[in-house]
Length: 156
Length: 156
DNA sequence: TCACCAACTGAGACTCAGTCTCATTTAGTA
DNA sequence: TACTAAATGAGACTGAGTCTCAGTTGGTGA
Image (cartoon, rainbow over all chains, first blue to last red; front, side, top):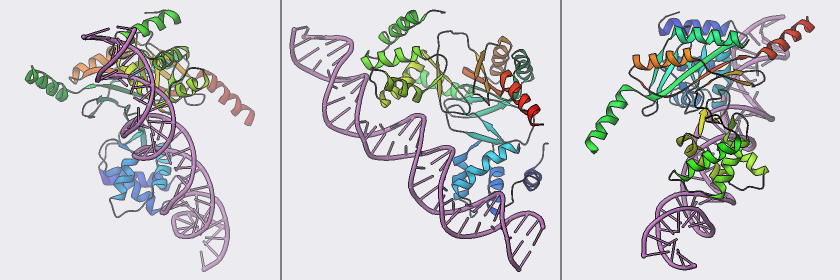
């Protein structure tokens, strides 16, 4: 399902069209806006982003559409840990996990088959019907480690 | 570090005493209250719990103490996924992960060395300084699966 | 034992994300 | 084209969490 923006937009609009949701200018605008945001975004980022364009969709409409898009599998909820709900576009069905830098907030995505396998095993063991999962590792990215080290050196 | 409530309370009070934090009646009350709550709790649960006791500590004081206790390693932040910040007492240093039932909200804790190992490997690979992590698997617990199945059967 | 002061406290105003209501508008259909 | 259920916007509301500030107090040094 790797595709460019236009193809993705067409795909998403098609999904919406064929769901029980009505196509409205607001919804089109929200979807278009979502697809221009690289990486993760919060619901309120979207409100701000749409405020800044000519497109119009109110806060309530945006908040109403997000769960519907999650339901349709267009968006995926990402637990950002230190912040409110965040979402990402499901353009690649391979599930990935996140490394989050506590200092600069950078999010590094990675895929780990070993972790996926272990999760399946745990769920089987507990008779748990696995729906989705999120692994977030917080700490310091390479760049922030370097910066902190150099600050310590210059301070001493 | 497995111990009973009294020992744990003594240990925590000792930690507080030897930190740069002052011992106040409010802080003692908050810590005592935290130790009576089994499992996870939200900051606001604590506010409510303390409201219901003779002990007194204001909302602001409680919210101020929580990060300090996390900093001291007495509490650990747990991402509950569908809700606001939740915490748990670090009485057992072995890190555990969570299975969360989307239907009844039950949280099942588990320890998985395979996952821990994979995380260490990923961090090394990305030159990421691992501080902490949280894995949350959402889905349906055994009981809820059974209930849903029986509802389906009786409906058809 | 006392005096001092930095740390702590409570009350309540504030902020911000998210939800709800309700009158109005509109997409899709028949 | 007319109808109606779904969608919309404005803005009030809710609830978690933060901030401010005047008053209080724990712990230390004399």
